[in-house]
Length: 51
Image 1 (spheres, rainbow, N blue to C red):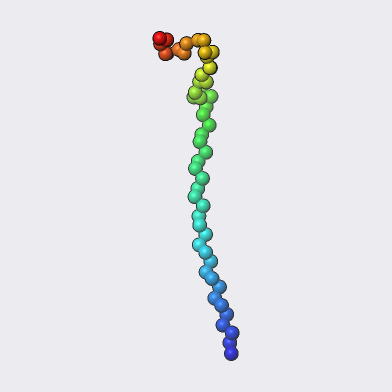
Image 2 (cartoon, helix red, strand yellow):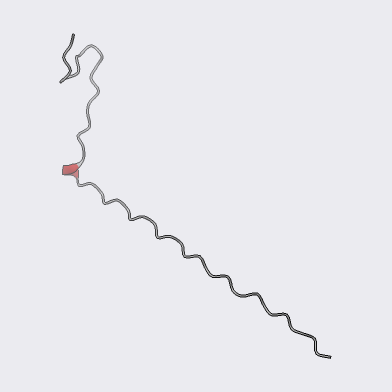
């Protein structure tokens, strides 16, 4: 009597990993936004009329 050999399960299909988003290009120094210096509270904010 021949012992039936169990069929091995089929290999699972590997799930392809989604490609990571491209790294954002570094901003050149001449295109970086100018940092606004915080003004003291006693000075009016430029551009806003003081009532």
